[in-house]
Length: 202
Image 1 (cartoon, helix red, strand yellow):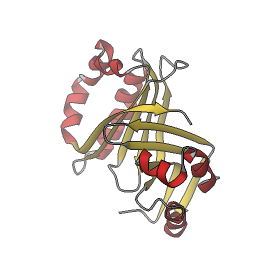
Image 2 (cartoon, one colour):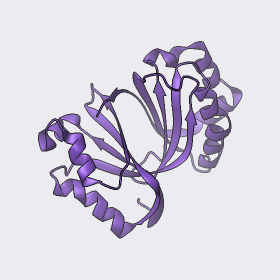
Image 3 (tube, rainbow, N blue to C red):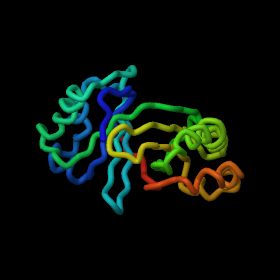
């Protein structure tokens, strides 16, 4: 359930790329920018097998959106012929440059999860203190971010821009994933989605 008023740093659009092209044509990104002129940065990644597109629409500053304002923002998609697209409010928790910052990303890896009752605070602390900084230090990681999703969950969204998909199987990446703290925390993930996307230039 949506919260009455929340802090928002970015919007996340979950949609079918095919549906976007059918509604808005090949230049769908321009139509999306026109629908949300408040946005300054637009980053896209696509999972071809599921035809799942994630678009991060980053705002120039954090906004506080109440429920009525939020419903008006969401309505813009329906008004423009995209009734099935999902829009989520994201609050930034951490944004770290990776050790491979500056290289071109060829993969975008997303981990979304809820938590067992009473465990979200510990999972957030694990991400902030150990996990996200550890993965950002792995060769092949360009950027590591974590967001709180205030609409439709899972509530925690961590995402990584990677030089290649093979970064996930590297020895340093597996070492970060295999710590004692990770072993204590990960069993308390719930409704977890792990998705490998390909970046899309717009």
